Image (cartoon, rainbow, N blue to C red; front, side, top):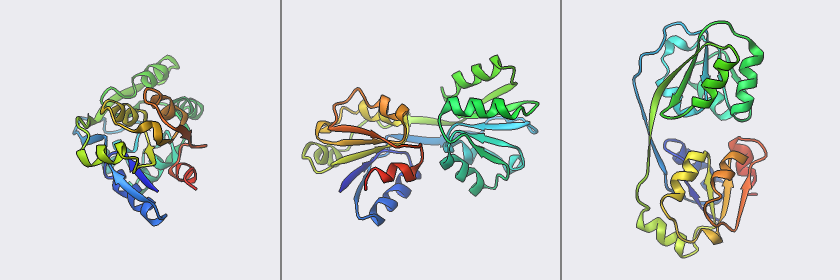
Amino acid sequence: MKLLVTRPEPGASATAARLAAMGHEPVVLPCLTIRTTAPRLPEKPAALVITSGQAVPALPAALHHVPAFCVGDATAAKLREAGFTRVESARGNADDLFRLIAARHVPGLHLLAVGERHGLALAARLREAGIKVLRRKVYTVTPTRRLPETVAAALAGGDIVGALFYSAETARAFARLNPPGTAAITAYALSKTVAEALQDLPWAQIRAAVAPTEADLMALLA
């Protein structure tokens, strides 16, 4: 199958390679560009709160020993690969992450490392629960403004039969490109939240992974 990969780099290329190994023909269209920033971070936070793997490159090695709570297994894997030694995954969404943090009762400041405009609701909820939180923007997100002609032609011509979406923000960025031909395409979403963000476009069907992991998303292609 010819499948559209919409996630940002470097994840897009990694997913494309995995799809090619499965016998599919990936078409890479990163709908977002991620750039790491250099904010001032606390030297000794009690814990880290990570809602996306995009935050990992901005975190210094000095924090590798700090307990890190993250939303899903993919982000947990990125943290461990980067050298973090005390990683725990909520294996779900922001609600699951909140419950995990609340259950662990780590005293002290929680550093919430996020992208711009991200994590506001989670930070507020944690504060309401009496958990001290410092939210810091560690990366910026820029949506793609124009649909490449080659991708538009493939969509309009029915060559692409499926599209993979890993985040709600990516889904919304794709919709803003006014892509043709989506009514004949199946959208594969990493989670129910991502699937909901795809509702503004017509699709042949929208399928959501059982659990928010790439393995579960890929299982939908079988």
